Image 1 (cartoon, rainbow, N blue to C red):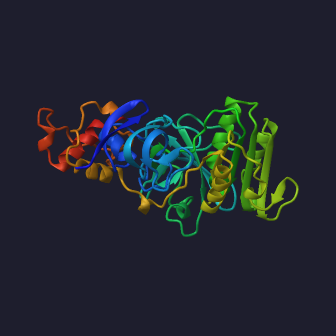
Image 2: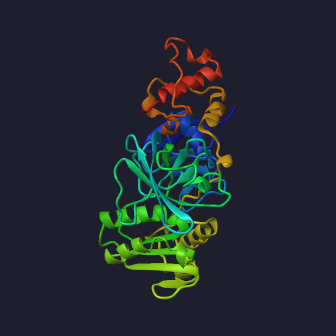
Length: 382
């Protein structure tokens, strides 16, 4: 039998087993540690280890680890930033317009607003198509209605979803949105903020930049946006706005071309010297993200990035719950839904929940499927 230990998460302590991942241990005590892919890729579950015995399983960055991979070696204390609960919303495509030859702005009008932090991402499902992850952003002038989500989507010739924008996906098309997720959301602070974007990585960076200017107008901010060519710099109007509203430095780069306010090369060529009090946000191609993270972490700076995953790499939350509920000795599903993981909201693709089971029936005698149904019922948040 595995040795037992205590895990304290944001001040709440649960009993866990040595060798469990932090996510599994927290969920075993009905504590919601935000997570999404559960494969060590998306960064949503990055937490800070305050003290204790934790094996980071190769995911350590400073005093942080990925909770879906890191395992307990003994008692431990961890913390994470509180974020809005993941939930499900429905709506329709309200508008579409080209931002460049291969980038389109898609505005989704929701039936009710979705709460998220600037820099987070959501899972978007256009009816009849597989889900894709996109970061909500703002129009070039910084506007967005409360019930709208604005996305920047690169159109790929062989893209299952993006190639249909403006064809079978038109204004009026039904859309389901699930989220928010992600670790790279805006955080307040006094140190230098460096924002780096490549291509449509500008979407989350623009959202973070606007919030940073609004929250602390005099904060030092350096913005670096890059593209393959001049046409790819579709965000130039937004860069102009940042220049006019106090950003210390705004740099646009192009690998092909340049001149005027556009410098030749890659965003990494223009990173400033970084220090331990600086915050770096990066979004874009994996090569750019990895290069910026390496430089930031080498300097001791904070670095936030949310790489997106192909859908086939994702491990569903229900599969993870099934594995947990097969573990002997787990506490039965509690009657207080408020302590459970927010990612369960709306797990039925049709938005339906099964009928509630009689409360008097002992949880220990429920078959696994029935227990999962009960978990779905308890986690209904909308």
